[in-house]
Image 1 (cartoon, helix red, strand yellow):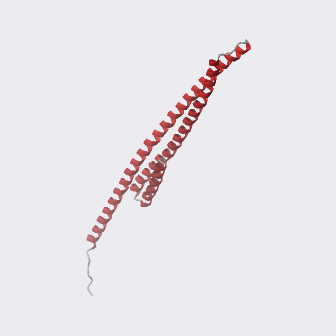
Image 2 (cartoon, rainbow, N blue to C red):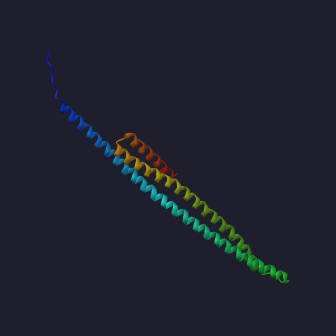
Image 3 (spheres, rainbow, N blue to C red):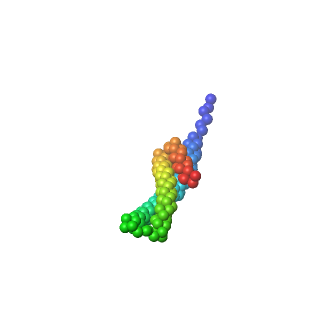
Length: 177
């Protein structure tokens, strides 16, 4: 029997070429994944910064309200002292002064309510900022793992980066609800 010789060098080249093309396509997918993760990280970072700024603004406005509250309290004490002093001297306090004292007390209630609302808004914005900051961190780790997967040619790392990207996306979406 005569042995048939099959040229395998050609088959080996085709197999290598096919493997190389497959690897190049996969690397392109990894690069695309990293780019998408980078965009999501940028959006999340921008929103985190926005909410941090809003939290600070609301807290500053709350502090302003508390200073206003104290100013009204001081005015109330001054008028009350005046009324008490006049009574001590046996004189009648002006109805205008008594009316003004009541007005200051009422204004303080409204100012206090506004200050508490501002503090609550600040706390909410800070909570949103913290969620988004975690999201940015998750996206950054996912991008790093993408790069490592491309360098080491380990697909399971790429899948891990996709999973982290999904987690980061959920944290981003949660900030809208």
